[in-house]
Image (cartoon, one colour):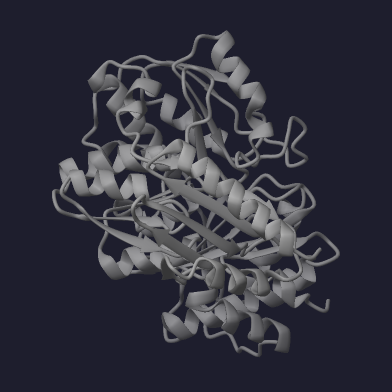
Length: 463
């Protein structure tokens, strides 16, 4: 098929099946990925590649096409079958495979599928995105790849990954003594339920399951916890069950949101602060990373704990690259991704759940009480604008707010002092949207500046 160039995103490949991506198209792309792997790793030996997929309805057909193509190219495959993306990342790093490919479209609607792929390096996983090779792969896939196999492709089944993933995550936090909690989880018929089930095989507690049966049509709701409408049933269940907390992973399980015992959605940056505090107890003076959208609260906590902080662009390819460069021990993203040096700089939501349960067990307080102690700043929550003149808006924001300190690492971020407040406006890397985030140390100031910016952007936005 003729491949649509727009499916090559900043972090991964996502497309509608079968119009934008079918078995023939994914085979072309797989050849390009394999050629890229050989150029970056080695063309003189057989590559060991981990392969897995998620529960999407088109997954089995596309997975078979990827598998067949890689065998034809001469790879040695470790077939992990159906896994979450964090489980996939863990396996590539933990078993020291050369690289890996996951067939997934994250939290996108049912008609989508795609690919995430990584290279294993001595410093951790290199997630392939725009800064790390996606454009090279795109060009090869569009122009076609000629390659003469040097080896006969082979394959073996890889089992036991989930158990090893949970054991490793427990080890990250010193195999803590976790008390028995009542927890409600809603993975939206998607992959997050697999590692939650595996975790509860190893820890005490009562797990109340909602929508755990894997179903790529997502019959209950979209597996996207960033849309808080998808969390309402979980919030109500936490309250009706008088549970200690709720868990809401996304479609491929690499994003996770928490619900506290009051049924409130927990800001992801609060979880970042909680884990940063724990990691700095274990590794005093180490580096913690977080993305540019919200930084004030986490920066303050890291500073108070004697650590160093680094601000990154939004997106897993950028964050894992920054973790590798800085040697940071942990990174938190305000969209619910949490990364650990101990998992090859990749997301581990199992480790994140364990970190929260460890603190709950040790402090003997509710989640809302623990997080209240970590409150340093106030966030607006993200507002999205669908516009056709994003660059014009960004330039006018720079001009209007030129008295502040500009950071153009990712979009436009401008910080003011006396009083301290800041905003970030950036174009989405996965959707045709402009995203606004505002924060300060005072709730009223955050609300005021958010409304001010929202009104200004709407006044100049073009559909």
